[in-house]
Image (cartoon, rainbow, N blue to C red):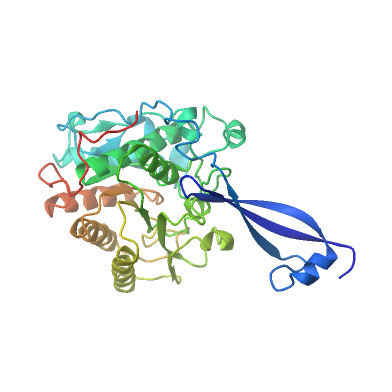
Length: 385
């Protein structure tokens, strides 16, 4: 190989203070002789991974002293259940949403169904607050945020704030549900697949920074699509264990992000209930054995539902209800606080299925005011506001 070769070099910066690491991709022109010397690791058109230790990372909670002041970690009265929602979650496009199969109001419909069943009233819900720019900068780059059309995306910022709030509630109460959120295709510097803000990453980073005793997390991503956003964000971070179960043939097919998955379960077109539930249960139990976490984030996408043209799987409504029950039952048995977000799935019947699942969890005693907190944390835990 003569002259110079264009090669892709991945640089991992590792923080010696908090232990976190993150990757940046750079194109680097290197002398041809370097390619020959390192041909086992670097070839023309290939890639090389370099690890650089830095004194402190930009995301480290110790970088600038105390974390910033946020409105998302305020005290919530015990009279309110740890179910987070706001009417402002719902997306409208001047009536055009009615002409599209994308159900842009599914979150409000879930709450309406739960009210009809007498499970909840407005006074029992936690009102989600909008994530501020300073909140978002805990993970996102300022350049990325500046590129977004912020007015249009306000409902997504409120859902993102809801996920962060639900993370704190999950640790305090043992469980929490954000009726929105689950934007698992978004990472710190890029969006994708209807996802503009990295709410899962943000919820975990907030917990790591602000809640004593929370230093290990597990993400259980059961949306039909690979969760490449949080996978890119936590690449190389040993504190976060990712289990991802998805249709191997559909978007996003992010090979680089797959390197962050510690327990990968790839499914074929048309996978049905029995096979799906068996794989979820077996792998979830193994995941918690391999990496006992302080908190679990459960991305409960319903795009696995039969008939979803984007998801490509064939799980029945009863199968989805059973899946959620399975995940909550395992988490509660292992005494792991669980935060559930609803993620993808926008068929007209999706909202009813989510509501039925929440009702089932309540009927089984897996959620509700009588469901004893399983966490060592409580409302008196010192938190940084």
